Amino acid sequence: MMMKFEMEVISKEIIKPLSPTPQHFRRYQLSFLDQVSPLVYNPLVLFYAHNICTNPKKGFSDITTISGILKRSLSYVLTHYYPLAGRLIDNTFVDCNDEGVPYSETRVKGQLLDFIQNPNPSELNYLIPFQLDKVTEITFGVQVNVFECGGIAIGACLSHQISDALSFFTFLNCWASVASGSGQAEFTSDPSFLSDRFVSANLFPPRNTSGFDTRSGITNDNIISKRFVFNASVIEALRTKYSQNDEKLPSRVEALSAFIWSRYVLGTQDPQGQQKTYAVVHAVNLRPRMEPPLPPDSFGNYYRFTMTLIPTLEDEEEERNYGVLFVKQVREQMKKIDKDYVRRIQEGANEHLDFLKDSSYRVLVKREMISFNFTSLCRFPLYDADFGWGKPTWVSSTALTFKNLVVFIDNKNGGGIEAYISLTVEDMAKFEADKELLACVNKSDG
Image (cartoon, rainbow, N blue to C red; front, side, top):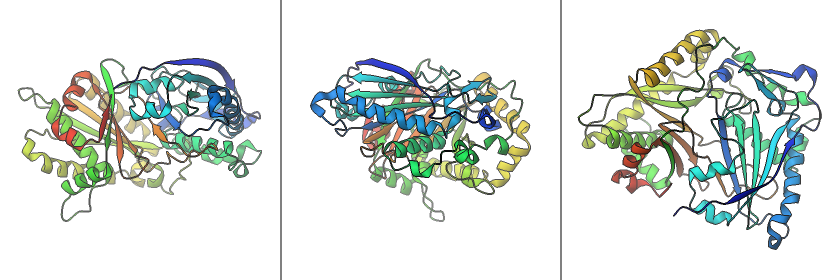
């Protein structure tokens, strides 16, 4: 049952860096990969359900102490992550002018544990500071939501124009370590301490991207997002189901992607309709695939994607073989994302840009292909952010603004995966009614 969401904004302010950004760091150039990233905000909500207030009976009043810690530590960290306190200029660079980060606080009616026991992705959007598809020149924002029990949810948004998901998590964990008092020793007073992590434009020089629409595929119209939880035992069974004797077992993400994909195709295809071409897209982290590999904390958009053309699945009885083929073809495409692939993008960015334009045109304009996108945040450090009152009880995404998108997030207890799936209203009705899906899902929330 969906809870009735009630909240009140109690304060808004701007948090500025503790010290000014040096003049030689004032212009942060976007890389080519930044320029072609979607014009949206990436969201994350971290829930802390313990009684972190010093006097839980006072409830909201003790947020002053907690908020003071968050604001002071954020100001300190922004000195080193200087692009986050600047303003984005024309999809070209960030003016690191220290204008600061919007920071707001809200009061939420109800108990935090009640909220996360029945989460609704659409309601989670109330806990973040920005509407995801209304990107402005502001690159980062924070919203601290306080529940009646004294638990809090920290909602944050970071512009995809300057950062991928791993960069986002790295920053949040850095902020948390400073807030808890364990991280300041890792910094120096010089803002250039982390400057060697802000080198994406050197590795992927900016290009003229005119004619490429960074809003391609972004929509709120007729889209619904729901969360589906798959237990570890279910995922292990799917890994076995889609395995081949002469190959290593599919990964958790490979197996779950194959399953969700097959249920989507079987549930939504029109038996009397025209044969469709499907393009399955997986996002890939480039850092470990570069030569030499980049450190995990390198900041920017260091990702690309595979595009696998998958034939139509017409027969339920062929679903297992279809899943095996799916895993094999996706693996083959993944292997192509190597150091030579990265070098070709660096040296031939215009060719890659033409590929992006052509793919977008075929999917969105000519409708020759149906695109289905997978992004995995599994194995990323989502649950490491301890601001001084313990690690998160739960970390979530929100309802996203893309059609046919699946985001995988690790279950905190390990092994299981939460899938945030965005489909058209009509396709979601068919998808979530699928008996094979329902047999595998631990919990579906909408």
